[in-house]
Amino acid sequence: AGASSARSASCSSGSSHVCRGGSLAALTERVAPVVGTLSLARDASALAAARGLPAVPAAEFRCAALSERLCAVPTQQLPNGTHQQTGPSGLQRDYAAWAQGEAGFTFCSQPWLFS
Image (cartoon, rainbow, N blue to C red; front, side, top):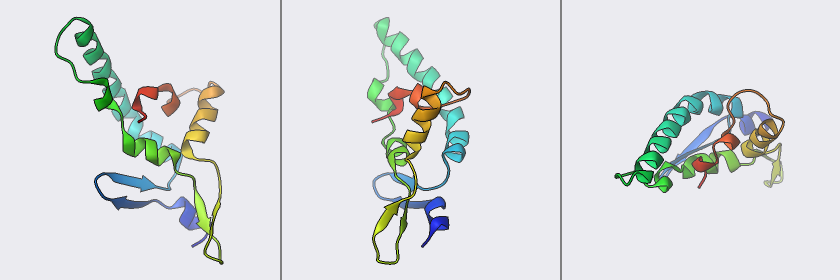
């Protein structure tokens, strides 16, 4: 354990695959293109629904695993076995970038993703 383990990604699987750790920048780089495509599909589905055509329910575009990953707070295990927070969650960092109007993709600009 230590600061390096707080930064490394570890994954567990159950009914869904959830990864914790790693950097927000790396996650954003991997996910932003997919989110762009999902956004187009979501918009097309909403347009179809508005015209009375079959559409994918909006809830199908939400991603619980992404929500959980972004809300995970980085921690490190202390010698006494307890855990200490080592920084803000990915969602807190993403919100700060979004609120400051930083250029580029932010998850907070896509609230429909969150469960």
